[in-house]
Image (cartoon, rainbow, N blue to C red; front, side, top):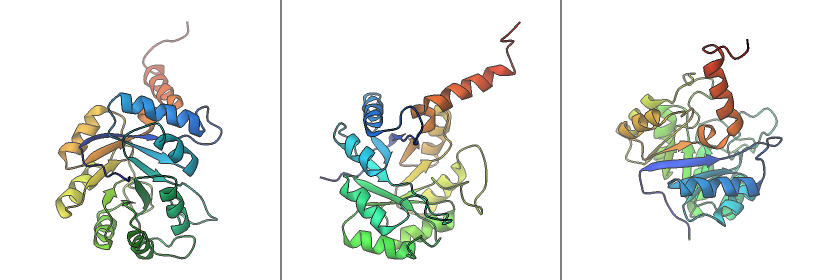
Length: 229
């Protein structure tokens, strides 16, 4: 049975890219188990194999997506209706899609994708980059709006910090659950997002990418401490 995320709290994104040490369904399933043991109320996962493996070992809802580049199309988060259906078939409780107005590589619009997924009974999360995109996705009937793409479109503000202001505006302008995601590196930022009205916060690299975590620690000390004499 598919499950919604109705609690407030932390969702952990368990994703790795090809060529990285933790790439593969087994590693991501174990990472998801560890996240749930730590109190995660949900998992966000990329790719049908990872989604299926994670669903088999955790008892929390899974947000699924499929990152795929098609030619020079800028839409890469579950870019086609076929991809969204594959994510749903893999067991995802919630299917995350690109929530922008940009044309998909198969020529469809977000309206067409959301309408068809709604007809199929799929719970949809729209990953957006601006307030306008979030309000448009809400009008189309999605179940969640996420700030995932803020800073990753050419027309959204570029920053190395989470877009708390977008979270706040979306929470004020819509009754849908607002999801805060993107560049969260501390618990303080997570608290800010929840206080701004987020239903839950998705944290990925700061928890599940050890190479990024190690690099962040290294950079923090290299200009402050004499490491070699």
